[in-house]
Length: 160
Image 1 (cartoon, one colour):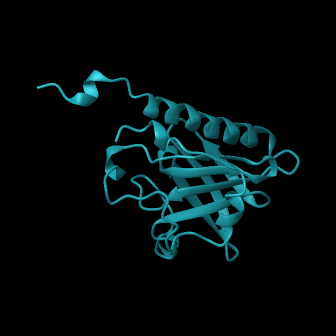
Image 2 (cartoon, helix red, strand yellow):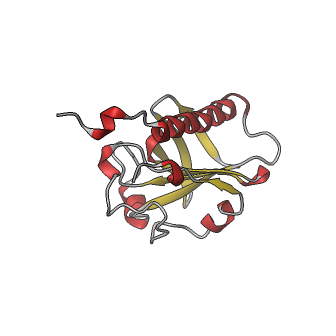
Image 3 (tube, rainbow, N blue to C red):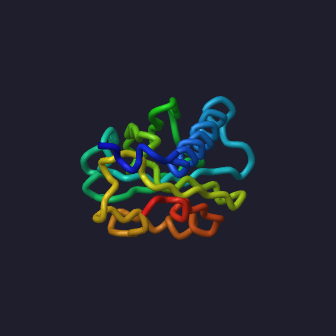
């Protein structure tokens, strides 16, 4: 039996992978040269996505999504084709975070009004109960700033 998905090219997934490449490339450039000028990144990710490695107390504080800011104090920034890693200070305690690129739902650089919004890639989170638009208890107060940029939503291209 042939699955309907086998008969179509999944352009939506192709575009999302390509745009996640923009995120990876931006982080790579910052790894090498630091953040130029006023550039800074807001990165929102799903805390319970498979492969997200954050301290338990952060996962409890941000049970759905968490937004981190890369601007002044971040250390050991790394990225590859699968995940990014960074050390940030939480209440003066350095903590290492590892986030699969597929767990990222928003990447924004407010200094240039640039933002990308993603649907998580992977079968784990595709379903009727998952709502990436939900700004539930995991959203922090700074998330309003990231929404001032131009958000590119790919929902219109998704197969319903």
